[in-house]
Image 1: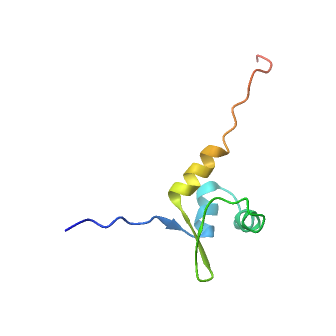
Image 2: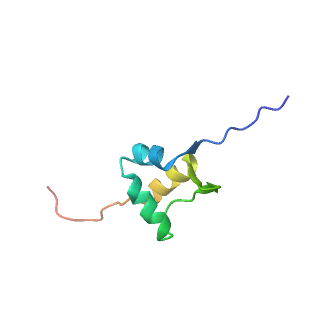
Image 3: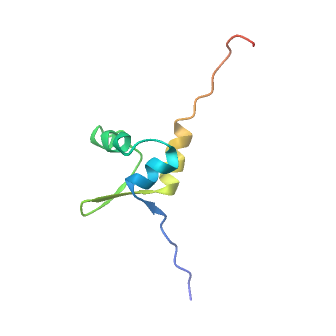
Length: 69
């Protein structure tokens, strides 16, 4: 019997907690079409954990140069 693959779906509240950000941040980003990928089932919105992790990687900033401290 094949093992089924479980989707790790998170609510907006769970994503906010996971990223240490507010739910309104993600709600606003969705309305501006700048949020991480999400799944909408009826009126409910879910995010895949893998999409959130990828989005976080895309937000990474590596400072270049600067003064030595």
